[in-house]
Amino acid sequence: DFYFTIVYVCVLVGDAISRRIVYFFPINTVPQNIAWLLVAIFCSVGGFLMEIPAIAVLTWLAAFMAFWGNGMVYGVSAKYFDAFVPREHNRSMYSLWCMLGDFGGICGAWAV
Image (cartoon, rainbow, N blue to C red; front, top):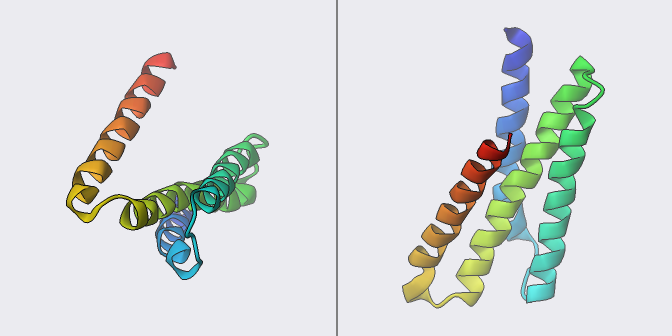
């Protein structure tokens, strides 16, 4: 049980820090947003691939990396909405984005 406590702490730290860290970097253009999203996807995929060997200690780093990428996607997307979507449409755009993400998760669960 202590092992999984450490895994979940790694998940929390990776996700929480990466959501905020993108606000410390200039992301002012669409190509910069795309580059950051690609880095986030690379982190997530890399983290999930690191779980394949099923080595206990490696799983901690894998969980951190996978959820670092996940949080970074949310952070970059929120920063994009703040910068490029008119303020009066900000909430509706963010809600639509979250709904589509949830729909993608449901479709992914059906595919398994």
